[in-house]
Structures are given as structure tokens and as C-alpha cells.
Length: 493
Image (cartoon, rainbow, N blue to C red; front, side, top):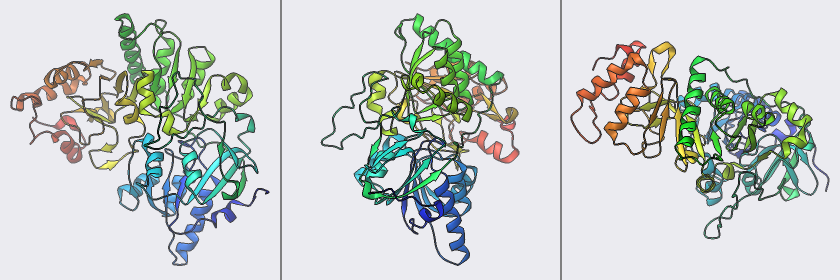
């Protein structure tokens, strides 16, 4: 059979009101662009005629503006899962115009297969190669591509000429069997390859192939500043001390790192520390700093789900593809974020908190406990199964008007049972083996900004003696004060 080439507008007509659509990619890396935009335009035209059009959407993680942004502005989404970072989508879901269910990223593909969630009827994926045998080679991100392609009735492929077919060989596509037939996932070293270099589908399901030439919509991260560089230095110092104390083996352990400017600063600090040996990464997002460290020989191998990097760096990888193919593997998120593999490999996990409390609980998702920021992402997949789990955050935000460390988190994503170390630019709180009151003193003494230390101590003094001393009438007083005056420093305990 020949491939059904058509325009994005023609492919969009294959998507009907009420369909459940699975999108390929992971972050804007490898996310489809032309067809989602065409669907958004089609939705706007239908709405103008008084016709209904909304679809449910699953993705690997966030996408680019041409997907989540365009579809949100077109009011074309009924529900969305599992992670997003679009300003327009955030507005819509916080207004309850989109039903959004946040999920651990490693769980989405299997929950679809288990039938816990509505089945995807259409898959839209980006590829650097597709052929009549039903072989689809992803581009810079994998996400949930294997599962949505197998489950969907129709597959729409964006064949992106900006992503050359030489990327084939960088991917490792593997989908585990479901219980009771599931076996161990045979990843024993970061660089192990266990699957195929492409997604194989029934070619009859490929309903459209749309030629595109679009770079990934990966924005630039905020440059490091004094605060993030100090956080990075504190993380590097902690891990160096752990090595000296014999609690990390001398050959070191694989690193998992979140995404963003703090993560870049942390990786930069690890790369510059002469006492930390060259290391590997088993993570979800491979970002800019990793590529630089790889070229310097400081990162020897990186396993992830996406290359979430700028256009210049991506072109550098393409220009030196043989070098990077031997040092990078891209997997489905069900494998890149898999708890079984994380625990086996002994990952040192480093993720960013939106908010922490003095007992070590972490809020990763909700501003003042109510407004969704982005989602939990893969932080829970890694944190609960880490060799050492580290959370980082600047001690303050908005020029000091917000303390990132509070008496009680306004929303809980990671409990104190999973959080081993908390690090800010102020210092390091090692929470291992400490009771709640010991954790509180460690966090206040080492991580809280100076202008908030007395406030935190006053809160503890206001609470009755108990295993976890809280004053429930004042536990969220700092949040209430911020909502009232815009400055937590005005709080009185």
C-alpha cells in the first residue's frame, strides 16, 4: 500500500467531535504541530456555525503552543491529561472549562491499556521517517507513542523534514506486557537497549501522512542567576560529602534531574565539581546542559524520553549524530520514568518544589493550594523510588513576598516519607532519620530565608506539643496573608 499523503487541513477532517486523541512527543520535543493547529482552526469554524466540537487529549507531557495553546484558545478541549505548561490551557483548566486530571507520567500508558481511562480513538504523532511497512520513527520525543498507536483506530503522522531520518537508531521502543504476564523490565545499566528503533503499527491504521518542516517549539530557559547557582553548588557539595562519607559509591550513581533553570544550574555545578566523577543520567528530559556536559566528557551516557533542547543544540546533535547515538537513548515514558528501573539503578533524583513545609512535605503543582501550575510530571515516579531523593527550591519568590517554605503545604504531592533532602540557596537540610520536630528545626535553620526564620519558629511555638506540632488555626496563615496583602512577611503568629 502507498502512504496517504494529504494536507494538515485534510487530516484534521479525520478528527470528529467527541474523539479522544493521543498526541506523540514529550514536552514540545517531538509534539505534533501542524495538525493540532488545523484542528483548532476547524473547531473555531464549527463553533462560528453553532456546531459543537471538543476532543479529549492525552499527551506524553506538555506540548508546544501550536498544540495545547491553539486548541485551548479554540475552546476545543473537553479533557486533558497528564501534564501541561501552556499559559492559555492553565487559564482554561483553572476556570474549569477543561477537565484536567494530573497523573504520574509513568502510569498513563498502562492506565490506558488497563481500560481505566477513555480509549484513544486517534493518534497524532511526529516522525522523521514512516514507511509502507508501518514503521514510524519518532523525532526528539517519544512519550506514549507506542501505546496510543496500538490502541487508536486511526494514526495521523506528521513527517517533519526538519528532523532528518538519521535520528533512527537513537530510540528504544519497548512496551511491557500487562499483568499477569508482566516480567521484569531488563534495563540493568543506563545504556541498555531492550526494544526496537521504531514504532511498528498495522499500516492500514495510518490514515494520513502530513509533510511538515517545523522546528520544535522549545523555549529558552531562564539563565542561571546567583540564587540558582548557589542551589546548584549546594547540591554538588551535598553529593560530594555523601561520596566522602561512603554513602554514594566512588563510581557514583545515575542522576535524574527535573527540567528548568534550577535543573540546568544543578547539572552545571555537578559537571564543574572536580570531586564528582563523570556520571550517567537516567531521566525523562535531556536538556541543554546535558549536551554540553556530554561533549566535555562529564556525562558519559543519557537515557531519557525527549531531547528538550534549543534548535542550535539539536542541529549540533544531527551534525554529529554518530557521536550522540552512542551516548543517548530515547525511550517511552513508561520506561524512562519506570519505578522498577529507578530503584534497580539507584537513581539520585533532583526535582524542584513549588513549595515545601517545615516537616518536609512538598507541593509541586498548586499555587496557594487551588490554582494548577503545570502538573506533577515525573517527579513522583522518581522520588518515591530514589536512592537519594532531593528537592530544590529558592527560599523566596516575588522579591521575598513569598516564602517557598511554609508551616504546612497548601497542597501535597510528595509526603515527608519520600523526601530525603531539601536544598535552597540558603543551605542543605538532610531529613534522613529525623523525627518531625527534628526535620522542622533542620529546615528552618538551614533552608528558610533569614527574614522568615523567626516567623517559622513563632509558628512552632504556637503549636501544642505533639509528634507533628501544628496549630491548625494558623497553619495556612501565610497563604491567607499573601492573598490578602500580597506579602507573606506581614503574617503574625
